[in-house]
Image (cartoon, rainbow, N blue to C red; front, side, top):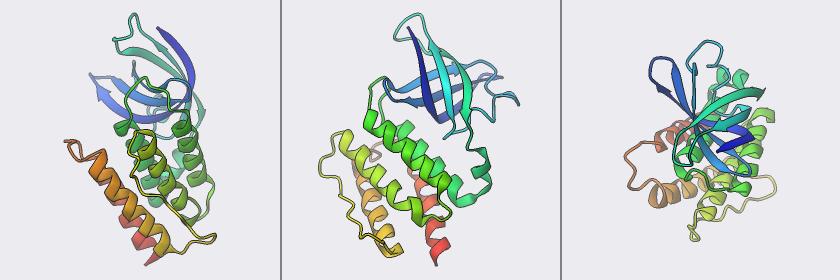
Length: 203
């Protein structure tokens, strides 16, 4: 198996002394996992940051084997990691994607929406510019995974913070009930950090 594709880094986990296991979202192939040799090196750590866009080359002898992965950086969002609110939003959007989706199944709408949300976080000078998009991304992900009773986010043309936080409260409840209810991993902690920072930012 060999797949070459542009991908959004969604999760990185150390493996062994020097390597890293990466999960990255692609448009045509969905979420893919791969082992990056030397992924913990000084050179590779800035490349393998969640929300970065890379050109990935996934190679494996069989479909069931974890692919070896080499990456080339296309676009870095590292400067945003110095901004606590933006960093928390990038962390949550990518962690949600990596944790909720099965590997190897294409979700082109989710890929496009994730790319749009990350771009909005990067471009918007204030959280109001991307918080609505993030809530809508959560609704889309729930719907694409088959949870038809997920909340719909209806916003006025110029939403107030109470509208945005209310929408995020609804989508958070749906994610907890439908996706992470029986998971041992505490992915929702990243979301709680984000919402807490949003509330403090507008207090």
